[in-house]
Length: 292
Image 1 (cartoon, rainbow, N blue to C red):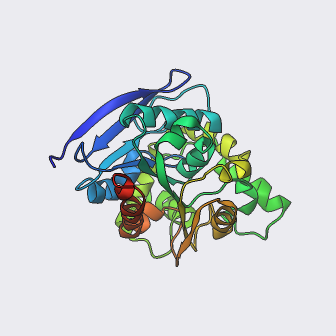
Image 2 (cartoon, one colour):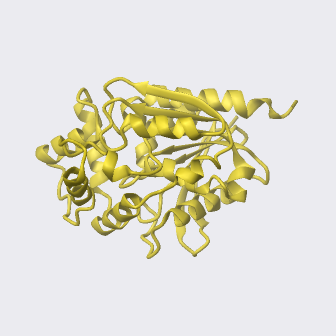
């Protein structure tokens, strides 16, 4: 199998042009990666490196993130449109892929669960560090007891219009506290900080509003393919309560894997585990189709 790399543009329902990358052998089983709020395809670097040896790894930048230009439309429907467009642009008709979503990327998968193109192309799903509803109320980024004050403060922290500025030691400490486990290595904190700080302020703010109003509980029941859920026990943005609530409502839940002490950035904090879980889903749910 000859390895390759190519870039393409997928055009979404409203004309938004999405930057898509395809890594690895063209004839290998496909894996699709959807990144989260304020991130980009760079967030999946470890998974791309690991999986592209023997998988066709398709990663794309969500609208306004990475190399995909901002768009006036920010909504969960737009996220679902975008994922559908990527699937249609990169997969043959009826070709099945394992689809992994982190954070807002997981919400993208949920939003698309009832869509025809998604059902046509999804063999199995991995949801990493994500939630379906009550994101602001359940977040523990603000270290107070649950209640109206914490919810109000959290909404203001996550929805801040302030520029993040350069990646300073203080900025890294804040990012690490909010999004990563206490034991995270400095180079991983630096990597995440650079990715998050590269997200334009207006884009960060626009999507924070969508996330604060998110309610995809109904969509969880539409996700009818085998679905594994991963969460860090130290996740302050989408604490384990979300993972367990989603898994309990999924029609074909493969259960929740809790990663002790890890934060919200599980694909960066536990790269081997996340890549390994994707690999298992590919070998279990896509390889057997030919003879079946």
